[in-house]
Structure formats: structure tokens, C-alpha cells
Image (tube, rainbow, N blue to C red; front, side, top):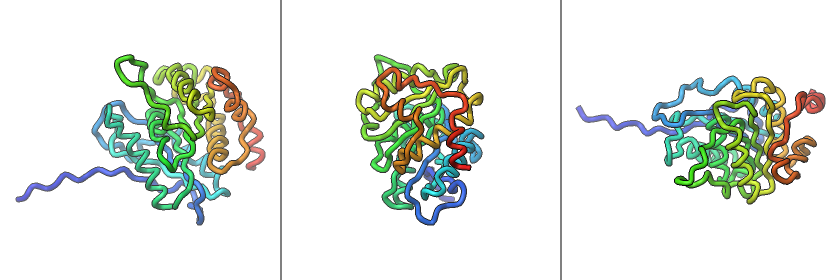
Length: 256
């Protein structure tokens, strides 16, 4: 018998979250977390409850704007060193959005290692904004090149991190944001005080912040005052902006 060829793995877009708009005018790609090294294919249910809640919140908030929301299904679980598989899959997904919907703006929203993928893939020509929640970023190492930031020029960027995160170091995301702010004024970072990696203590506030920022970046909608202040403030103020408890209450009344 002839030897069968090994099937080529491909990244995929998950089904659109909620009712897909008849006319798409913008898109959000959700990038779940992963592992540092792994050649295994992610489980179909890899996306966490937090990612699912995030996708639903953003889709509901953008329904009237013609927003399409998809979760990216990676080829591999791992980042895998210089291969940066998760970032490559995020770039592919941005191109797939253009193929499906035409020339619409894309926001990459990543969690954990998906946050690094979103930041790395932010240079794709279709991407106009990036949200990285509790991003996994590498340690500063003089022997290795620093995580790039120039690809984010011209994009609006939000980073959110819990101050008690013991899994991904919030100080590393601050240092990354500080370097990115030097080449791009449209960078802000919020700190969720006393919260950990899963951002469970202030989940609702983080969901509203992400939706508020995303719709503002994609469609030019007015954003909340805290986001305005964080974008306008010089470092380190705009990169250590505290996320206030109860954020989003006024947005809830507007969307009720």
C-alpha cells in the first residue's frame, strides 16, 4: 500500500458569534491562550469561559454597527519559539476576514498567550486595533531580541493586566507598553488592582472596557472618559490607569 500523505494543518475561524450581520462593516478576532511549546492541535473547546463571555459581550455591543465576531482556531497549541505559530494564525485570520467580508477594519482581542499573538500580528494591514488581556510576554533578555513594537504604529492598543497575576508578569506588559508608547501615542494600559490572571474579581468591568475600546477603535464611536484619559496621559500614568470598580454601569444604561 502507498504511504498516505500527512494532512496539512490549517487554522480556521469559528462560527460567527450571535446573528451574523447582513452587511459587515468591522470584525473582531478572539485569540485564546495557548502553551509555550506544543505541537498538539488545540481542543475544540479550548476557549475558556472568559473568552466566550468576551466574544458574546463584544458581539452584542456591536450588533447595530455591523460587527462580525469570530474566535480563531489555531493549528497548534504552542507558540513554539521563532515559529510563533499563534501569531501566524492570527495574521492568517485577519486575511481571511478580508477575503470573506471585504476591506473592513479588524480588531485583534487576545487573552494570555493570545494577547502576545494579537500584539505581534497587529501589523497586518487590515488590523486597526489590538486588545491584550493578561498577555503572556517573554522575559527581558539581553541575549534575545526584544518583543517588537513597531508593527503597532498606526493602531490603537489596549493592554489590561491584574496586579496580582502570578502566571503572566504584569510588569512585563508595562515595560512592553512603555516601549510601544514611544513609537505610538495610541497605546494605553489598565491595571486591575488585586486581581489575578483570570481577572475573575472584576470580570464585568474588563468585559465592558474591552467592548467600549473595541467599538471606539473600529467605528470611531466615542469611548468612555477613562479610556480617553488613559490614551491622552503621558507615561507612566496612561500605562498604569486603574480600572475602577463598577466601570461600565453608564454603558449598561445606554445599551439597556
